[in-house]
Amino acid sequence: MVEELDLRAILDTYVEDKGFPPFHPAMMTGLLLYAYTQGVFSSRKIAKACIERMDFAAVTGFQKPDFRTISLFRKRHLAGMAARHIRTYIATGRQKHGTEAATHAKNGKPGSLIAAMRDKLKRGGWRSPYRLRKQVVEPVFGQIKQAMGFRQFLLRGLAKVKAEWQLVCLAHNLRKLITAAV
Image: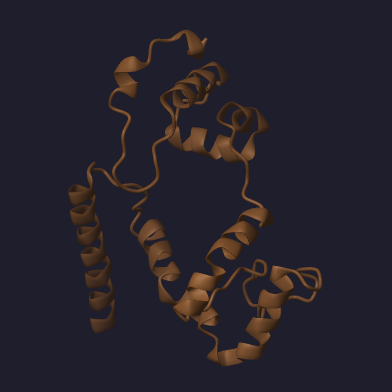
């Protein structure tokens, strides 16, 4: 049905100068029509369904990333990263709250990227910058989302979103200062 629609008006404005290219209008139209007949009316629920439900994944052609994606990226960029002295890191698994690390021996077959990363993390110990990843910004985003209830931007356009984000960060920092002063 979507193939029969005249989408020229949308396709004429189908350009993106920054970031990833937008999804094709035919795919988005098909997804919206499918979501409507399935009773999914919220954009957040549609996005969640595209990840969790096979029927939505089939409509969008969405596939979860796999190890090949990381491997191909690594092969393409490894020489450039080494030339710039950039250390690369890859997740070795999920770290449960209260556990020492996510570097369990069962993660990754010998010789795999995950096994190599696990060994790299063990060698680095407390000096490894990877261990600091959860101490830097992730708690802040969690506090902004949960405590402040900020889940989405209300404004559109890069300049407006930047200004809105600066206000959210200002409010977060003021909140921390007030709490510390009490």
